[in-house]
Image (cartoon, rainbow, N blue to C red; front, side, top):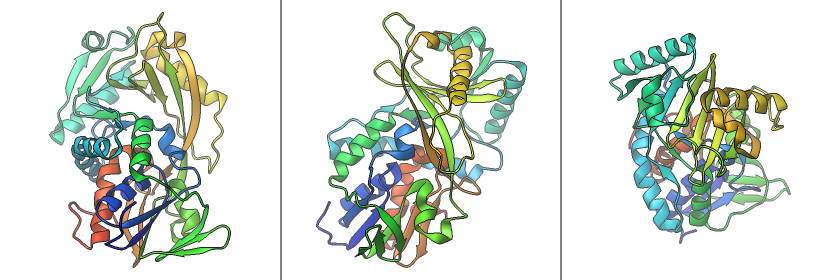
Length: 359
């Protein structure tokens, strides 16, 4: 990927985090090898693509909100540089996000979110159901109130992955069995040596480095992909996060009339089977907000494994000399890709990170 004037780096993991780290490191002059038997797959391939630190904010997770907000500020530059490096559009959408509620309990939750964000000085606007439908006519009459968060954006996850794969070039598809300081051991018994190894294998990170086994866990999530037809109402232009009788579902539009609906959340180990109940629930909840969805073309259902951590914060930094980690991003892999890549690059360069690290 580069001349390697700054040394050799192995990045283990070819999802959005690993590829972002590899691209930034190669651009800075490191000789980078990415290891992944199926690059661009995994949780990154089934992500909704929300870049929404504000609408996903939760009391007690202010550090995550600040980290996500800083990464969001970097996304336009990150997307522009990636487009120039890859020749591909990464699909950044700047229309903003709506959070909507259906019944009284959902409205109370929305009010609590608005009040909490207000204490943090975050930019939101409370909307009536009528005002929500004026912005997004496809939304149905069951929507009683909403919150506009214009600063929370979205991205097409698969366009991002395609651009990163093009920017990174050739990837070693050998399967990794274990990583250590400066070493990558493959399942065929071969061992490769590097100046630095970056472990970015998402939910599988603990299987490759034993000390992380009890730190990073898989959190299953199912998503649906649908597409409007010429006989149906187009999907919303904004990302819509919905609270439906206490259940959370999101609707993220795509440029081709497509719509991503997600996401369930299970503690189910490494199981990636899509369940009938998960599909039923997502469609049922989404239809209460977007009635025309029942007439959309059903394109895909899939499940991915988010890399969860104990405090929902990612693990970014040095594990041992010669071994860095970038994992545990849970629901925020797409959002945190720019800042994660910058933090890892700072570690590789021996510099003080541009913002507080996580480890």
